[in-house]
Image (cartoon, rainbow, N blue to C red; front, side, top):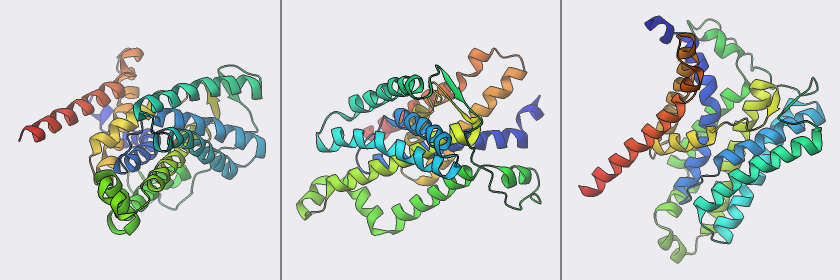
Length: 300
């Protein structure tokens, strides 16, 4: 039974499941470091997922599909930023509103634009191709790395770029200062609102990529509520990951493995309804651990 869990197939599936979580979690991480807790990742992902399918279908181009997904995520993020940063509304309420609005709008547009309900599939939707790197020689996971989607590698590149930006570049230091010492920055005349806007819009683009991966990167179609709570799991990932990008990457991969485990356990007789709750149970457990750790630190 142990071999059923500890296998390269499970690792490969875990990477695929972790990719959209990682992209969205990186976006949430940027917002958090800028002093904004963005709970609207789910709706932003969903907007990107729908826009990616619509753009790929309309243009017959996977590249323009990716661009459409990014712009769809940025559009949803701009709504969030307008209210939270410019109008100073409550970020939790606004984020939940973005999530609810995205569900309603994508359901409506699915009917209004494509004339279908619940699901849209077509041969004219162009999928994102694999990158095709010559990595077959790597034992175990080589075939997967050579045939996986471009978006998987793009997620890893995004993590590296964000890590370098946050640790070594002045813009990253300034972004972190906005979240940690906004009063001092305001006194020095630095543009706090503009920095927050930028972080939220970049977050929107990353969430749009996450939604794009789910639709034209994996499924090749759009299904109502295709994100299925992954935006909320991404929140748990960047919270559990701590203050570093490396922790966010590791947390996203762990949640991806749990998702893969949920698929595997169905083959071992675990009821499907119970198996599909495992990632959300893991997310709740992670948030509980972070909360307990924070309470211990505050008492020390």
